[in-house]
Amino acid sequence: MEVKATAKFQRVSPRKARLVTDLITGKPADEAMGLLQNLAKGSAPLLAKVLRSAIANAENNYNMTLEDLYVKRAMADEGPRMKRIWMRGRGRRDTKLHRTAHLTVVVDTKEGA
Image (cartoon, rainbow, N blue to C red):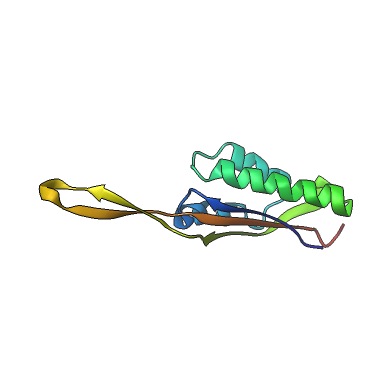
């Protein structure tokens, strides 16, 4: 049974977060957690928090164990962009886009369990 957790409006670029989600997809949950704790990417702590939440949902709501869980899907979808003014020289200005992401992690049990 699939169990998911989401974190919306996270201040990380979805393109950069997808690099991390591709690493943990298909891995066992405990291995993915260890990988996220030692990864030097800005989105790794955010995804670790979402993964911990998905594991807790599975354990508390559906009586699953950590040994049987694996990361079925991990997604980083695009959220709304915050637009800010960036002042340039000679009285000009540019627009800065602060991107946000909706992070989702889906865990499931292994077929043998």
